Length: 275
Image 1 (tube, rainbow, N blue to C red):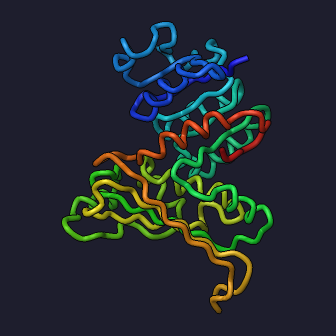
Image 2 (image 1 turned 90 degrees about the horizontal axis):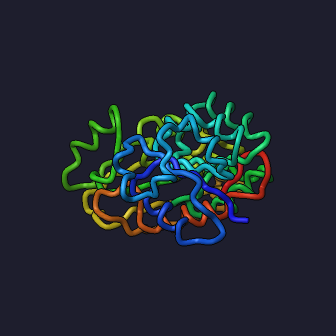
């Protein structure tokens, strides 16, 4: 029997997911909700448009996928988990300690799924965290200034970038997430995979590079067993160049990765799961 999927959000990623779901036989569309309902008319079958998100349970979704904004998890995350599995497309929301605790508690009957997105090597990092051998993790994300949606001091710095790369932020992922909630979901996924370090100890570096018009670059660097100070510890560094439309928040390859995560988001039972 095909799983029923509800999609919350109809931006570029939401549109892609709805289109792909409708092509498949193993999953079917339960509902689509968007803050601006007019954007759904003529694009989504009328009977699949959910006008009031509070009525989501009437659609009997097996999996609800958020691709809208971190605020959705704040308002509805626990409610979603009381009726269905929930895939959180904006895991930066979990940098809020109280929300992470609430959703972990709510995931007692259904699964809370975290998509890997642009994060590379998540399962391997989680295995090291499970064994307690992961000592440090740093994620560097470099994008064109136009690809950032920032707030506060980071926005002010990014607005001054002209012709040379500028470091916008370097420090804990927890402090970064509220300042760049749309841009650093990759880092949030890393902090969840590296659960023995968490949001406070996983380090994030955000770079605005005006020469990077067609790519997003994500570098993941980790240290495992051994003596880091003496440079005798296990060390791995990966660099991924993700093609991206100019000014886009997400790279092109992230869309297909997200669909793969959606298809994998089932059958793992209660708790928090990478997918």
